[in-house]
Amino acid sequence: MSDNPLGGMFGDIFNLLGQQGPDAWFQTATQLALNIARGEDGDPNPQPTERQRLEELAPLVGRHVDALFEVASQPVVTAVNRSALTLAALNQWKPLIEPMISPQPSSNEALDVEENQMLTQLMATIGPLFTGFQMGSVAGHFSERAWSLAVLPLPRLSPDRLLVVNNLTSFAEAWSLDRDEVYVFALAQEFVASLVLTQPGTGDALRALLIDAVREASAAQSDIMTRLQTMIDPEDLTAIMSNPESLLDGIEVPEETDATRAINAAASVLSAFFERAAHEITAALLGPRPALVEAYKRHRRSDARGEDAAAALFGISTQGAHHDMAREFVESLSAAHGLGVFDALLRVDGLPSHEELTSPEAWYQRVTTSPLA
Image 1: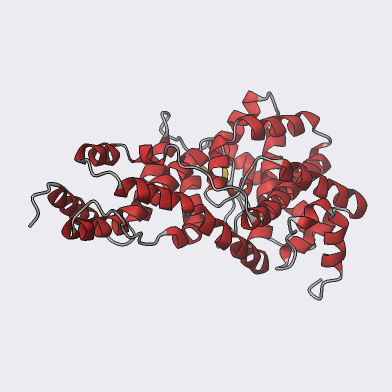
Image 2: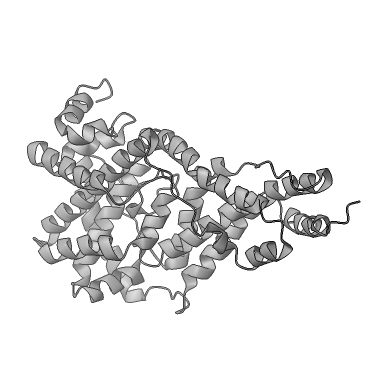
């Protein structure tokens, strides 16, 4: 038995973490996320009158969404608080994050064999937990201002449509907007996103892109493991255990790659389409709403840090030239062919490539001549 005190300390930590089970990383994420989501105000439920108004507007919006895609759907919406959106986000993200949950072997040759084996076991357990810390922190902050899951175009397993009513009313008050126009816009955005992102073909295509992007994002996980393995001072490890989020400080975001360019092209076009469709449906129901258009644009630039952090988990960037190109992509195609052309997004071959961002007509020709069209 070595005299090095690290052996006993690692053993205690490993035993403690091992008792939490293989899903401990997700339990950790959930607990942290809900703690953040509750915030200082305790995360109150939406007022019954606001919930009722949202439900009254839903069928009107739903008819326009169905007409756009020439489908029939149920215009059901659930008014929720931040915690409920956080839980929905965690459940949606879990199967996409799980590929990052893998044991990381220790390479610290400064420790003797016994301690090296213990550290290897510790890394296999604590590595996923730190992924959970990161995911939980992001999910909690995501719901601070987000209206729904529509803002992050990821494949959905559930058709549930959730709107954080208190965040909508806060946005309306902050920008002196009528609540009905905000509700109609948010409903349209969420209904369109839900319809597109629950399609099996679209979901499969997005998952294929996300697998590569998330794999590259796991480079950050490797950086975390390297930091842990070089911390041979017990005081360093004690500080990390008391403030685990500090371990994430300074972790570099991987540079842009073919995988991130591909997912950014698809995600940015989906987001631009959801927004454009929502504005058109709002205008069709209530007339032009230029103040809402401008307010939402500024909201996305100034109030969406939690949403941006959530996107980064999956290698998706919410800033950059590809977003301007995506807006132009959607605007040019809708002007030339109408928004109905984007029913191609319901198919497995409908997502645009990075190259097609600068050539919208090339995408149009491809999807309209596709055997799946």
